[in-house]
Length: 585
Image (cartoon, rainbow, N blue to C red; front, side):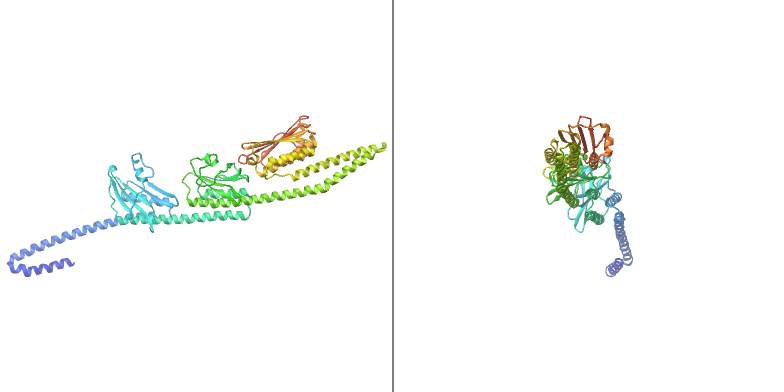
């Protein structure tokens, strides 16, 4: 508006002071018209150029706004982070004309999320793989466009940053190398939109993860306070480890008190009671960065999987390990920290269960010792006195009338003596228990030594394998009671001179054999003896209670053999049915 007015006023002044004094009337008019026409043409050209530049700026701004709006709408709507990056990258490829693109984002600790488009490169685009996998060296500006003449390719790199924190980068590849018609300011705005949405998604995801972790730890803590059974506790802990760490397998390996392998529990996508595999191997070291044990079931089941473990620490050393395996990605520092917290919970559960078990065993042992003392001080003494008095009365029967009574007194004395021997053997069995230093083998050797001295029946023990590694403490106690009951039957019924006990620990199974050289009995009496007898019925119940089977092999004048077969805890299920020919007497 001002420029034309100023031009007219300037032109009139020039004509008044210069043209009119120097030119005639017609010449002045012609000159003025020519100058005015030239000015109008120049003004029109200037206005046209200005309008063209303004139109181009509006088109560019409209392009910038279109791309920015497309990306902004892609990062909204409550999408997951991978979906958010997928949509953003797809829309950038459409609006920029890029051939391919990739977004690489740090997801916390050592984790990284990479989204590529196209997701799978066609055979003719394999040459793009090295370009898409590169990590650009972006300067402080956060944007860089470069060409690679040998590949006839242009590469646009954008830094994804928010609040001064670098989260990752975005790369677009153009072939041929055409620089996108989007301003740097718009590209930086787009990178900021993606970075902000990604940061928000990561923050929300982290909050949800922390909430789930707190809920899991709270549930485990509640089970600890109500003193749940150890199998239930460990199954809950391994279940949370598998779920929270997105692992295919999670297993607890428990060490025995002598640092050998012991019973273990695992959590898989199936329930614990349907044949889930149990870890039988405890790792020797405890570092999270050590090599995996090659004989661990987790390693042999998936040698290519990512594996990590945390020790179960107790005041007296390592109680075991909590191990997890997955195939998707390595474990981050925060995930290893969570696994350590679950391992600490498992250590508390194991130690509490062991203390409870030790308390129960001590209580049982104290009660058995009390009963043994009372039997010794009361019933055994009374039976001994009755036996001696009956023998004295038998010796006084000298006349013929007393001979019949002497026979009856002799029978009563024999009965008292047998009852006395039964009480003595019961006292021996009550006082004998599993020793901490020698386990089942040491306890059996000590029991057989006392048994031979007390009964006069020579007995020996043969042990092939380490019973402390093959048997749980509960199984050791039950097998000791089975041996005691079997040898009691030998003393009372077999008239044997020798008895032997053999234990074979062969890999996943354990076999116990008790045999004597006594008179044996008719195998046809097996079923009736099992139904009405108490000795072998009690033995069968003890063996089946620990998941084993018991069988008896006997014949007249060929002695008796009792066999107990016990599978390892990871291969046996419910107690096996009674084997054919099982008997008791």
